[in-house]
Figure 1 (cartoon, rainbow, N blue to C red):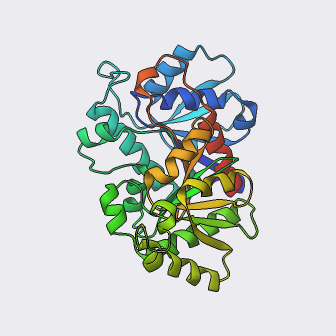
Figure 2 (figure 1 turned 60 degrees about the vertical axis):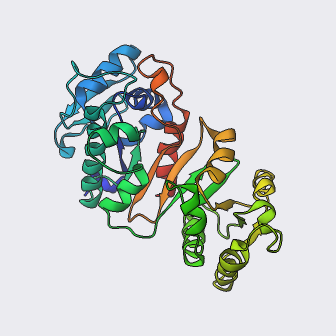
Length: 330
C-alpha cells in the first residue's frame, strides 16, 4: 500500500530518444506538480542526462531500486531505475529498438506497481510505434498495450481539453476497417465508458453528443446507412438507460457545438475524426485518458517529437495537465 494512504503517481519515462525525460523534468519544476507524490519509472542515467542538459537547480534526483526507498519531498524527484538504456548507444531523435524496449518495460513495471497497490495511477510519457516494433513489441500504441496487459476487452481512448473532450469508437485501425466494423454494441459501450469518465471529472449528468460516420450523418440514408443501422439504435438504448446522449450529428458541425458549451463530450467514430479537432485546439494542453482500465491512466496527447528531442525546447504543458488530471479523477 502507498504510505499514509496518500495518492502516489507513477510516471513512465517513455521513449528515451524522444522528449519524455525532458517534459517530465520540466513538469516537476512547477510547484503545483511538486506537491504530488511522484515516482518516475525509467532509467536513472537517462533522467540524469536530461536533468544536466536542462541545468535544473530547483530539485534533485534520487535513484531508487524499490518503491519503498522513495523520499517524497518538494526538492526530490524519485527515479525508479530499471537499468534499461546504454547511454553510449542512445540516439536522440532516432527510432531504435533499445529505446522502444525501454518504453515498453516502463509500462510493464508501472502496471505491476499499480496492481500491487504501490502506486495509485499511471501517467505516461510518449513512446514511438516504430521503435516499439523494432524491439519486437507489436502494438499500435499505449492504449493497446495497457488493454492487453490488463486483459481489458472494453476500452476506449478519450482525449480531454478544457474546451473539448472526445472519445473514440475506434482508433488505431485502417479507416476501411473502422467503417466496416462499426457495430451498435461498440457504440453503446463507448458512450457508457465516456459517461463514466466524465462523471469522475465532476460532471454529474454529462451531455454527450454523437458524431455520425458519414457526411451529414448519412442524410437519412442518402450518403450511407451506418447511422440508421448501428448508431441511432445505440443512442436510443443508452437514452433508455438514463444517459444524457444525443445524435448522430454531422461530423463537420458537432465539434463546434461542444466548443460553444452545448456538450461535455463527443463520441467520434474513428481516429482522425476525433484527433484532428482536439489537436487543433489542444495539442500542447490536451490529455489522453484510457477509459475502461481497472486503474487510472493518463498521458500526453502528442508524440515523441524526435525533431526537437534533447534540445531543451519541448513544451511540457500536456504532461503537466496529465498529472493534474490523474489526481483530479482519483
